[in-house]
Length: 396
Image (cartoon, rainbow, N blue to C red; front, side, top):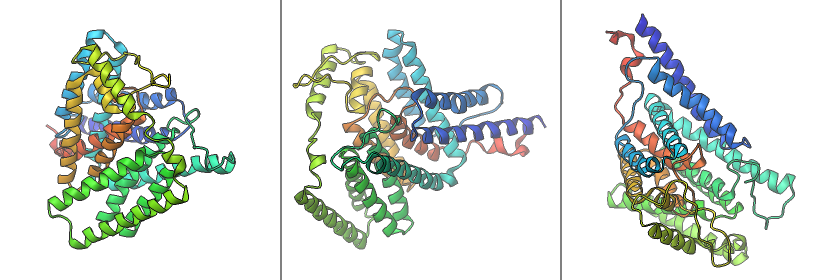
C-alpha cells in the first residue's frame, strides 16, 4: 500500500511538472515579465522535480542517450564558472539541467502524445505571431515599411525571436504532415511560415528553414530514402520558391528585408573571436565577461549574435565542441526514430548560428530553440524505466 501511495504522489508531481512545462512555453508567448516567467519555472517545474527526488523512493527521472554528453557539456561549462565563484552562473547551470531532465522524463512518459503536443505548440506559435501582426498593422495602424517589434512589451516580441519560433515549429509540423501523407498541409504551412517571417522583415528564420530543407533532402537522397516522385516534387517546389522570390525582389517587396543586409554579422563575429583570443584562456573569458568591442560605426556591441560564439567567448572552446556534438548526435538519433524533431534540430542549429545569446541562463527562449528539441530526443531514446513506478504489481 505504501508503494501505491508513493506512486500516486509521483504521478501527481509529474502531472504538475508537465503542466508547468506547458505553461512555461505559453508564458514565452505572452507579455509576462521575465520575473513572472521565471516564477512559473521555479514553482511548477524546479520545485516539483526536486520533490520527486526527496519525498518519493525509486528512480524518479528517465534520461536517454544524449544525457551523458549533456552532463559533459554542463561539467565543462561549470569549470570557469566555479573558478570565478559565480553563484548566479551555478544557479543557471542547475536550471538548465532541471529543464533538460524534466522535458526528457515527461517525453519518456508520454511518447504517444508528442505529435499532438507538436500540433498544439505550432498552433500557439501561429496565434502569437498573427496576434502581434494584427496589433501592429491594424490596431497601431503602422505602415508595411515599419518593422513589427514588440521587444519592450512582449518577452518574445523581438522580430528575430518571433521568426525563430515560427521557423522551428512550422518546419517540424510541415515534416510531420508530410510524413503522414498530408502534402498540401505541409506545403501550405511552409508557405505561411515564409510569409509571416517576411512580414517581420527578418532573414534569420528563413535561413534556418532553407538550411533544414536542403540538409534533410541531401540525407534522404544519400540514404536512398526518397523516391523519384518525391525528388521531383521537391525540385518543383524549390523552382516555384526561387521564381516567386525573384518576382518579389523585382517588385520591391523584399526591399525592407534586404536593406538590413547582414546587420554587421561578419564584423561582429570577427570582433568576438578576437576578444576570445585576447583573453588567452581555453575555458573562455568568464561567465560575467562584458564585451568591449564596438563596431566601425561606433555602435556598442551588445551581444554575440550567435549562441555558439557566446558559448565560446564566455565558457570556452571545449564546452562549445561538446555542444556541437550533442546536436549532431541528437540529429542522428531523431532520424533513426523517424521523428520530425530531427528537422527542428537542424533549423535551430542554423538560425542559432547567426543569432541568439548564452545557452546557459535563466528561463529564456533559447531554451525552447536549443534545449527543448534535444531533450525531447533524449526522452524518446530512453528505455522505459518508469514502468515499475506506475504498476503496483512490482511492489517489493
